[in-house]
Length: 284
Image (cartoon, rainbow, N blue to C red):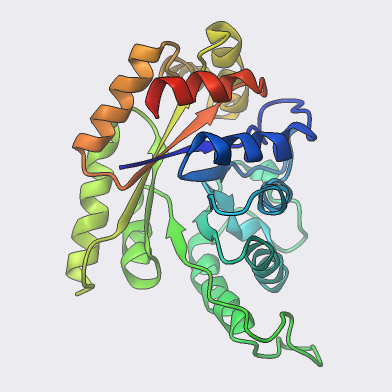
């Protein structure tokens, strides 16, 4: 199982200039990938900006959005942004997409929080059309340079439609940020949908987990703050699941490995660069 690390782009009031240095340190430490979290209505750094900064600061480490809220974006604009990030990185981006569940993230007129699943299914076709160099409706030119590749897609979500989307249009599935025992069924459903669709091989499975190895209380408070729109009980649960010791992080990694996950993304809860070294010492 590969071990990646998230960028601190959605830590409240993150210092944006830490992101490029964080990315370089992650690559030097030997993590497999850098991940981003996506929200708009939160005082963090936009995931597309964080991924672009990481792409320019590194040379070989993978880049994964875990997850970018696709339906909040006009699809042609997102396809162009993603193509640019992927090209700058030299083809290292994997686009993880989710629907979004917080109404205040939907800030574009006409792109509200209803009907997001059907909208995403239509948008996927638009992304691929743009990446193939086809001219978008109302435009005179293609939106991307010749030679743009089709960026591989992963999907999150717990509805059956999400698993079917993985099998129909994706390379794999990103599980929710929850303990292994709670996520195992989701990975099984992704595998089952893949087989039912007649796909060869197996879906690429990515797990997510939070860690706070320097200041556990502060890290858990930040997780609670991020998930506060889910209500007090949901936010407390996410905060309590944050691994606050080396032993807890190692146990989470082992448990996800036993589930047959291909890659785990360990997400920071503070923007302290020392967290990078602490995590590397614990799991690499």
